[in-house]
Length: 143
Image (cartoon, rainbow, N blue to C red; front, side):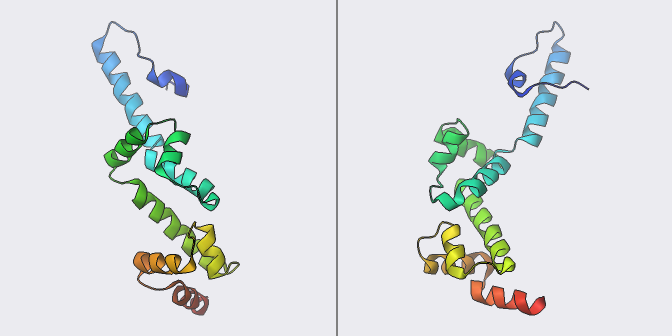
């Protein structure tokens, strides 16, 4: 097994064998895609910066050292977009926060970057077909 540093993956391998060069390039590309899904990296960044209130495609593309257009194109190639990833992360965190019973609905809405609790209620209902309060009550009853 060959192990390469991340910087080396963009350097072409010099060989006289076209077959070896193509085989290695394909394997490197496959492994990069497997381990560095732009969507999974974006998910982690969103989770880290969500409470700051400054979660935008521009900010994340800057953190990834990509142009906004390249960032959007890579997400599109993975079958998603920034808005869908942001909603997915907020939806998952909302469930975690509601299940923890440590936070009020108002606190959760602000931790997820909503300026008003009503916006959080509408988004949660869109994501889960129920309100945060009904979800929280049903979780309490099932515990």
